[in-house]
Structure formats: C-alpha cells, structure tokens
Image 1: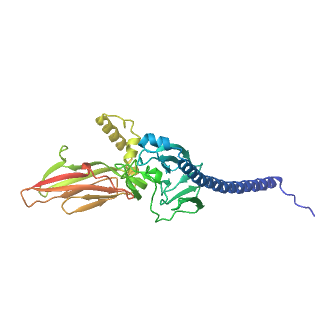
Image 2: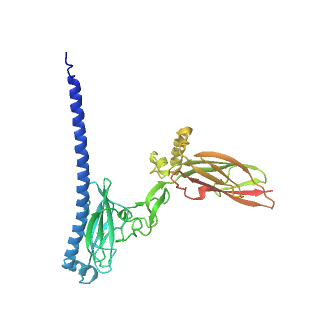
Image 3: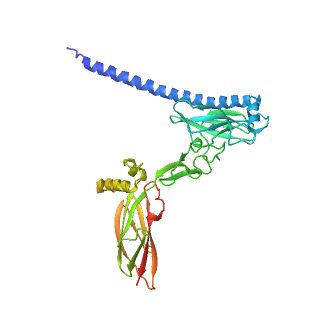
Length: 346
C-alpha cells in the first residue's frame, strides 16, 4: 500500500502561519505589558515629582526667591499644574502671587500616556483633594490626593460626578478643548474662566455651518439689508451654506489677503466649481422664519423659497431670519448676514 507523502509546500505554509500567530501573540502581550508599564511610570512620576517639590519647599529652598518677589520670607506653596494633556509644570506660589508662580520645571508624561478630562493638578494644601486620571492605550489609572495631603495612585477611573478642582490653568490642562467662538460650537462639559478661552472651553468642538449668502428677489439694499415690496407681492428667498468656515478658507490661497474683493471672488469661484451633488451630502436642518408667523424648513446646503407678505396698515415691517444646524447639533452664528428686513407697503 502506497503512503501519501505530505506536500512540502503545505508544511512551509503551516510553519509560516504558526510563526505569524506566535508573533501576534507576543506582540499583543508586549502591547499589554507596555501600556501597563508606561501608565504606572506616569502615575508614579506625578506622585514622586510632587512629593519631591513639596519636600524642597518645606526645607525653605525657595524662601529667598519668594522674598525677592513679594517681600516675605515664607517658603511658598508647592503645586503641580497640567499645561496640556501630556505636560505639567512644577511650581511654587509665593504668598498671594497665584498668577505669577516660580516655575521649577516642566515635565512630560511618558509616551502613550495622556491626562483625561478632570482636575488640573495637585496643591500642597491640607484641605485640598484631587483626582487626576491618566490613560494609556485604553488602560486608566488615578493619582489621588486626599485631604491630609497624601498622594497615592491606583488603577481605575474618576467618578463621573467628580467636581473639577486644582490650580487655574489652560483649557487643555483640564483635559478639555478651546472652541472657536465664530467657527465652532462646543458640546459636553463647559468650564468657565480658564486662562486661554474663558467662555469656550468644552469637552468637544463641532464646526458651525456658515451662511455664505442669504438673498432676496427683488434685491435688498446692501447698505441696510432692507427690501421694500407691495402688499401681496411675491418675494423669493435664496441661500447658500457651507458645512464649515474652515473648509472654505482652507483651500483658498488668498486667505491671508487684505483685499476683500479678491478674496470674495476666489471664494465665489470655488463655490461654483463645487458639484451640486457633492454639496448636498451633508444633512442639515435649515429653518427660514419669514417674520410674519410663518416658517419653512429645508435640508440642503442651498435652496430657495417664495413668500407673500400682506399689510393692512400704512407700512409693515418683517424680519426674515435664516438658521442652520448640522448633524453634530452645531448651529450657525447669528449675525446680520442671517437676517433681511422686509418693508411692506399697500
């Protein structure tokens, strides 16, 4: 009876498959061990750096510097303050000079480790508590400062209802993001009074839709944005929106130009070159309030509608307003470009 021989090519394939499987297993284990190591290193660095600075302050190492700054010989107050999601400053506050601390050092978290949303840092006050959450490839840990001033770390997460504390710092130092007031709408947690964007510090930012044009036929007066019509005369409204002001200007070579006419021409050409089918991909909720109690809705980036106004008196004035909201829930900024005044005469 003849024994069937194994194909040598199949043996090579099996070996390669086994080798690749082993590599993937070793790689996965390596990733898990790496993230655990860098996370522990990051938490331990925060703890040791802060405790070391606090010890130096208690030994009056900065007493002379504080004396020069505020005329007092107190050693100061140690604090660890996050500047952004990966960097933190070790500082000493002399007396009441909270806004002008002595910067001892600026350090970075280990690679792959980032600070999450929450407390901005640690302060050497007996009644100060803080919880700083760090993350590395999905693994999280918390550096905790208890009321007695003791600092410790452990794996886990900060409670969702934890109230944000810590030294005043930048928006990113709290793990949040500064939103552009004109171009973006914030969502999630809003923190007021931060250093760099006191009113627009949010968990996330979404691009606002932008009204590029809002016109009527008959045309309105460009200086006053007022159009005068007779009662029961038909007025046609038309609009063009952009899903983001940033997208429009990003591809415009004249974005830095001070010549507004050249810039406007370039933008108009860019809009005309955009295919109509492509411009309708983004879903919008557009509302046109005619100002007389009647409204109409659209869901396209550009559209038009007609309306008739009536007036029983000598003259009637209505204000038509255009508003737009994108899929992210961000609404366009309300400006004069969103409104047109309609003056109706018998």
